Length: 204
Image (cartoon, rainbow, N blue to C red; front, side, top):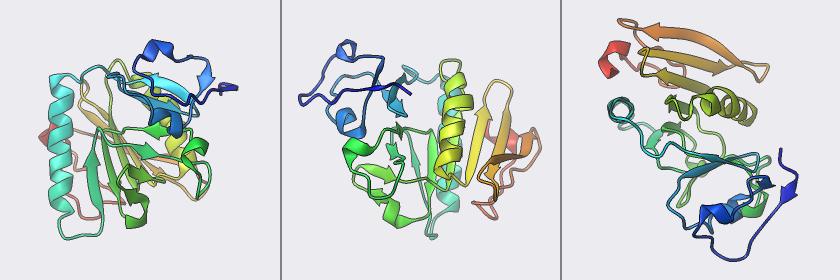
């Protein structure tokens, strides 16, 4: 984790003015007005893909819409990027004490108390990340660890190129366990979305 904490008081409209070795908080993040999309993981800046490709977009829209339709009339809600998810180290943290801000492709949140005008604060029940060459390492390593530590109940990793969906479920020991790897005619089975029916090939 970066050791330097840099909390500028003014708005920053040029990303090159930021120190890549510094640790930034959500309070800093709110002052950034540049167009570049970034996420914060343990205070470190991670650039997001400049623009998802067509297949990524298709999978995101199709899967997000199907989850949205499934959740109609239920207490859980689904949101799609760009949507800020703040993952504080402890409950009640102020903006300047939050060093994890991510924008998953799709999230499902069942606790309404975690939703506010800024997005979500606290671990979503379900997170979906659709891999791209630009973000694969971050999604498979940094975000995997962050979601696990934060208590995300279920993490889906979607591989558009291979047309595979991996689902990890948080075990009693606080660690993710690979529940299954779904392909082709396989029907996705989710512990969060109980009764959700979708064959993998339908989203590719």
